[in-house]
Amino acid sequence: MQAQILRLNLAGQPLEWLSWEEAACLYVRELVTWTLGGVVQTVHGGINRLGERSTLDLAAIIACGGDRMARPRTRPPLNNRALFARDQHTCLYCGSWFPVRELTRDHVQPVSKGGRDTWENVVTACRRCNQHKGNRLLEHIDMELLALPFVPNAAEYLALTNSARIRGDQMAFLRSQFSRPRQEGWLTDSLGLAS
Image (tube, rainbow, N blue to C red; front, side):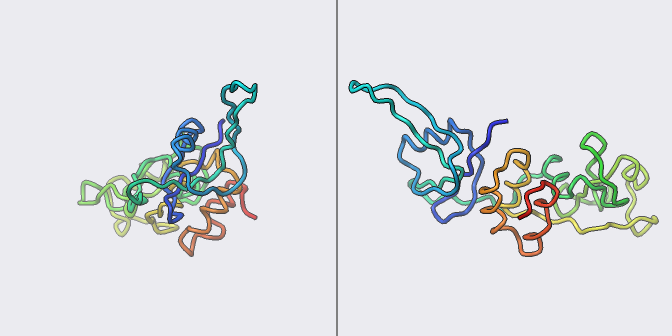
């Protein structure tokens, strides 16, 4: 798996993950204002008339300028991959860990009862617990949540969506921008990235 490059705006707010090709284009267009972290990849260019080959070192974290200040998403898109990572692949009803293929998205307040498909209303559930709960409210059955659902901020979302390929220097940068309750022991421990 190829490491990805974390793109920031000039204020240091995380925006997105880039491939090395996308990052190289930003370097060549002189939009990279400052960098952090180690070199992810060195790109070799052509040979000039003096016989010298050009190279471009791509940093793990790049801040890019432009005409306008790019703003991070205020509300990241909801998808199962990020949801399951947020809940650490743990059913929030029985507390057991499961592989992705055995997990489902459960609406705490069922859609049939006015619930919405939002970060605050969905949790990771194993198939058995999801089927047992069905479209009932928790107060009507003998089940309770082990943790409250939350909306990840931009840094947390980027860590969730790239957790298999994230580098230590990128994680350290993102972790500094996690919400205070999640700065220690959340996501990083399950990925083996805790320092």
